[in-house]
Length: 460
Image 1 (cartoon, rainbow, N blue to C red):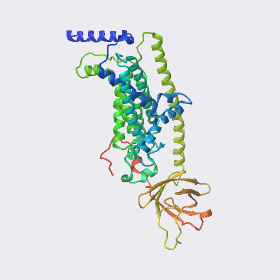
Image 2 (image 1 turned 90 degrees about the vertical axis):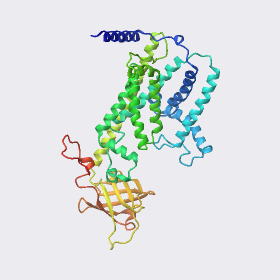
Image 3 (image 1 turned 30 degrees about the vertical axis):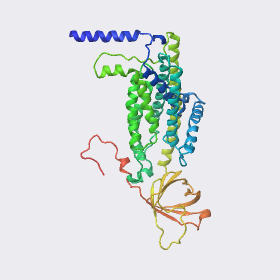
């Protein structure tokens, strides 16, 4: 072996040995931080710590069996109530954005106002903290605790989202209404959801990347690799959310910020290794400085317990979701009427009666035996609950405005359907003739499948 390579190997061996044998130093052994570093840490501690505890997005409290989500929601409510007040009295946000509402969106007006409020409060707290604690040389112990909280928070979030994709539950396969809808009528988020959900294997691969990144973060020996991998994975998620208007922009943006914060102490060694090609070793401290072995063992036990609780909670929820998804798929497969239908105009000889749909529906899509989607000529769509009774040959539809109608089903052939109002609506609402819009051979999007050999592109 050349002499230069021997010297380099000896240097790396010495570095590895010194890192492995190096004990965690006591708090007093660290050098004094610069003024900018101390002020920056105070601001980061207030803002990032507040976000991890109060945002309500997969906080560490969520893993406590039985009560975790309850306390998480209580803390989030404390955080968002002042934001609601500001939305109403300072920013004058119109309804429904001026009230806390659960609409599966993390980018509401109150969310944005809340983060602005958190930033302002953090800045004020940083000023007060800097005045009262200006003599402290560093915050290495507090930094280690914050780093621990941040990586647990990011790890939990990524493991949660990853598990929802490894067991493909987050993005279901395209529904009948999605397949029947013209592409131009879909929202960008709907296009993204159907794109990923179209192939469950692709969704599982995406989920596996998130799951692995999150699991690596939960253990301090692999946390740096997990933070780097998490930053890469979350960047892709953030771009999806930005470019396809998915209302999780704030959360995914903070996951990226938190991942970079975990990497920050080791940014110098990483730069020296990857850019300058110099032997280097991480210098970041993953647990609070201490010389007592029992303390380090206790933090390791906390990590392991956190991981077991996280996996237990997620596996239980995933098993319930899988059972529900299988039951829905089985119900759709056994429903011969579940397809897209065009509403034919009434024959000229038929009496003029009001529409039983309470809207000028032009199409009706029977997604499942319990849900239908109605379209009108102006492009308006509305989901309504239905109940198909194959034994009695009836279809019960709760139309817009709670306009319930029970139809008797008659079919001359599988491509046509006649719905005749019965009960209270008999003779008071028009009979509906439907013609199937679903292709006899199915939709190419779902039946094309995968081909190793293609003599020409299949484009249509």
